[in-house]
Length: 235
Image (cartoon, rainbow, N blue to C red; front, side, top):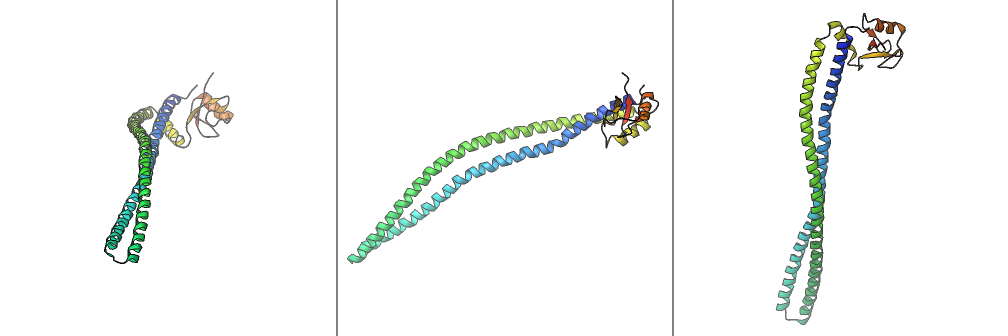
């Protein structure tokens, strides 16, 4: 027969298992939240990286505009000087400088045009990438909202579970409760059946003496291998 404390011990153990499970699930939420936030941060970094090419091209375009402006100023000076010189060799020399400056400006303007096409292409690629990344961010943010709801729900469930554990603890006499509290923190479940002469916790064979105590039910039996509380389940 079972010891009278076995039934309330099993009730306490079941409720304690639920409490532990809820506590573990709640403890996992911050890590889950951190992983989702890391994905959001990665998506935002990817957006910034996608912008980098576009910004670099814009910078190159501005530098070219400055170069073109300088070359045009130089060309203007050469033309002014040419209009003022009297000697033929000076006129021809300035004509050569003018041709060189015009060729330089032409090359710079061609490169500027190429960069403008590259900027347009880069903007299109960025827009497509940004749309996808923003969609991903929205998806991750919805997961954060779900995690917040889960955390609130688990917190409420855990509080309720802690209450049921306290009620179950109140149904046990002090000696049995003290024994459970000694075993449960290091070995759980703390209370198991003896099946086929073996402990239902460690699955090792218990001694005949330990099984006899569990069968008799006058006192709480203990597995002489793992120390769990044992009871004998009649077939």
